[in-house]
Image (cartoon, rainbow, N blue to C red):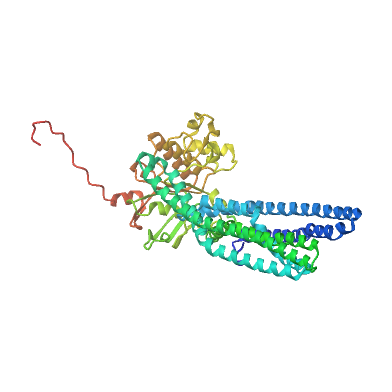
Length: 576
């Protein structure tokens, strides 16, 4: 199932492939003995016809039965162990790749991708493939020469027919590949796109329902689904047709083998027992070819899924450090920072430089599209700078090992998202967390009493779209999450966009407390009431620093907006 050298695979995939390789080798050894034992039935039949029937010896029959039953019972045990081996391999894929795949999907989503749910489906596809029957077909094909050799030993005519049959079925396998690989692969890719569209539709259900977009979205989805179904039907129909031809051809060849056996028996060139045994051996020899054609669809889908997982893991291979770093003091330095989004040809940020000392509060202002939210994401290491760098205590925030970095950084994004879990788990960043630290963060964000009024208090379940919280309440929970653990760097992107006066007052108190604790705060905002809480102001325009300095000095140079002309109501009959 590999498509490249294992040494070039991502580390999680490389280790998984190594274990799968060992498992397949073990299964191949079991298969060797199991296939050898499968010779018992044709050989037993031949001995019964050629010896027992002619000698009328019941003792011989009893001995043959004992040997045959014991051998077939052993074959059953080996078959069971082989099946369990494939199940264990499927479990290995789930255990070793689920977490790396989820992490890779999150990294992909940060870059604008949509592969989160598709990656999990691909892993399930691989697991299903490994636990199914299609994976064992190559192991069965390895032992085709054994059955051919036995047929030649019975009579060269049997072996010649078997060779011709094997060649015919190999040709049919190649034709099946040529006829179905492309449409099935395209159908698989179309299905991935369709699932991504469905996920996006569900995420934006509120806007779609409010603006009556559901019929149009449904038509687009129906068109995509119809295209996927057409591709799938085309590939599946060809595969089924060729599978039916293969099945019929196999039966015809078995009948032909029996007919040749009759002619050989009539000519005294072979025994009646060999005639019966050759038919059974021919069936056993051709069975893997039939399975190969029947299971071609599973192979195509599994290879496509593997390719996507491999690409996802390769593209998201972390270039960050793996050594946890100590708690920083909070000294922030941005040096000639530039950022060009993937696929874009012009930078969002250009030559941005400034520095903050621990305990300083910076306000970032500027018109829409100036790059303020991009700067926030770069500050917390979500995106990698295209040029320059961002350094916390002299260490790159992008390269910093993520778990230790997260312990020292708080972030409230512009679009607040709460994860599936309780209020306590969300504030504690999905960890068990110290209850005292959770309550302290909630009090600092001014939501301790609000949480006490929830149905289950801190154990109230929340989610991205559930929980019954208003937009302002969700934003304050996100603020408590950012404040949890007393971070040394706090980045707030429009943290008051949904807050009322009470919430904004709590935010101001939280910023003052963080400043007093020596936390460096970077806050993107438009409200003058929040600007008054900062020490320094950074004005961005067209992705560049227009002004930076102490708040009072920058505010003196910022041109105030021209006041709107007063509007006077004109009564009926009055001259304006």
